[in-house]
Length: 127
Image (cartoon, rainbow, N blue to C red; front, side, top):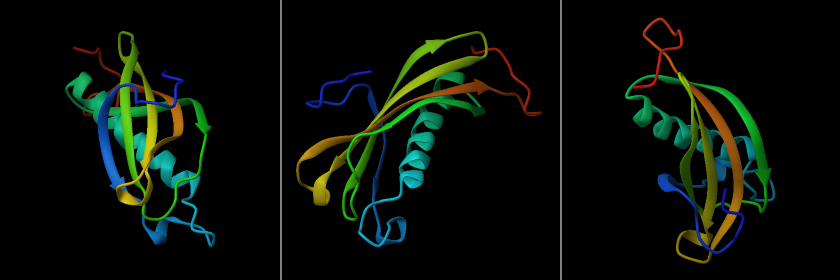
């Protein structure tokens, strides 16, 4: 994972606007919402690599660095760090564009593991 705060590491996987319904009374976005956005981004990346259905099997690390605010655009970057026979590890960084157009700051990073699954939900080899 890129630990510098100057530029994202990985490919842009998702981008979404943080809305009031996703926040607490102070206008800070719930950590669970951010986690969900990261899981979606990782799932897209894993599904592309697996060429099919995948499932999240572990969140190995999650670090909240700065808050996300209502009106920020949350951009999630993903990079496949490791692949096994049926599984893969995805490194993620979430960056916020403050007030949609402002400064870009790293807000969260995490490591998620996915497994490729077949139609019955059983692990299958990666192509």
